[in-house]
Image 1: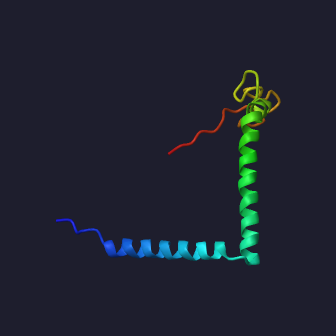
Image 2: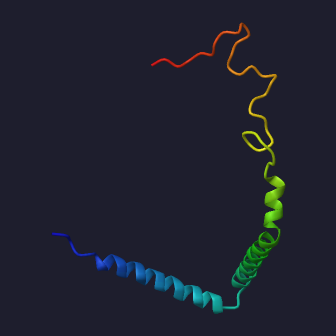
Image 3: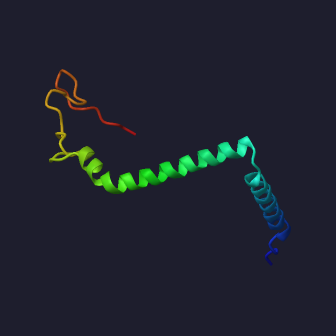
Length: 101
């Protein structure tokens, strides 16, 4: 028969999360330099992410079209093989080597 879940483990995790959040709220409400710097950096991060989101929403298709290769071939405009490269053949014109088990 299966053992019951260990609720003591989950209660310890919940207690540690709750204590961390209460300490974080206490620090957040304090007016010291460390919290002020954290608030400024957090605001800058959120503002940057929102600006990137809106810029990508407006200019994303343009940027994607600039870097998408147009044309035919294996990767858009690139040819399937290069005419001046011989591949795996040696200079004598022998057949390419194959792997043997």
